Length: 531
Image (cartoon, rainbow, N blue to C red; front, side, top):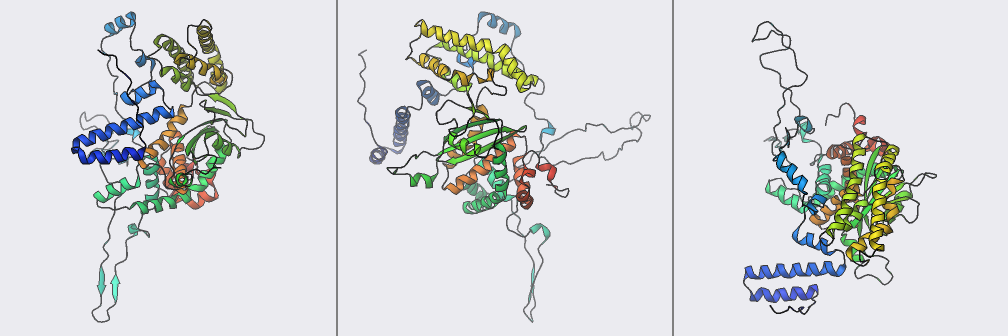
């Protein structure tokens, strides 16, 4: 076969691409045009990723062809001869008893209906043997029935009207108590906030769904109801921020976000503008045995938002532990912290190049896997921070020291090219070795920033489904709802029940916000509050 030559690279701007597609639409059949349009848009997206240098070859491969996991066993699936023999002897794996089932008691939001036996009562003679007496068992039989319903239902009240045929006076039947005083029930606003920011459901999509079901809920009305709820939530949110600033351990990271009003103000950027990027930062703080999640959207990146949080820290408090990845914008600039870097990000450097350097990457990933196994064992044992530190020093210190020595020897003996992908992965570990291994020297230091990465998925879901925010006010409202919802999830509280409780008791939450935290609000509900 003749040797292939590199094709001529043609660069088109977005406007030129749109012009080309408009010409092709008039020349090609509809089906063929749609295929060509998708191919050109895919090529433009791919070239944009390459030019921005935001993705390695390994990541591009996963984006295009997909990878479900980064587990070492999936990256290097070839089992040893011994493990193959053991697998044959063991036979096919079987699922454990009850696998995949949800216990009836796990349906905490279900309405409870107690059903008594229609003929028998406790203390009566047994109808079978006629000798014994019946006693009530502590564990009743359980049945669960799940029904479908619209997200928002409406009730239309027709009030009878009577008119006197002589004087003309009209008499209208009084509205029943269940009609309420307002058109919208107080629980509508919290539900809208939960669906929009907790579930990623955009206003226009919910409006269409409700129209299909015969209960219209315009997008503008949705926003008004959410904004009213946000005013009631604001005092509690401020109290959460102040409490989070006192945390012993704070995670932080950010992701890009779209805010239309900010983007328009910065485009085209002024000559003296400092930054045009827009970010949503996630801050996770562990304080007083609780975990608090905070979100902040704007031009400030993760490190600057951390500085804003630490400005509320009580004077004289010791510096907190900070966990983040190794990006230069993540550490705090104005306040002192004890910096730890995410070991999972260091591991990913080798996952991206595993196919090019399988033996070396497998060695590194298996070594880090042992450290993670040790950390999982420490959690299972329920070790205190100090006991966990000693456990890692006994079990993980030698693993990390051997790994550092092994990587150094590979470079010194020139077995690894320093500028290769493997060499760059080694240098990443060396540059950040101290913060990557802080868990071996500091009690309570975590291994990775995964809890913050998971929290950011809320913002990413919103960005994908709603394409960002229109105004800074909308971004502020989104940050408020996401902060409270994610904090509820971290504290195993019901987010919707929590939002409703604050909205119903907004006056008390304004006067005593610390009584309405996600972990203690249910203890302050009045006895008459049955919802």
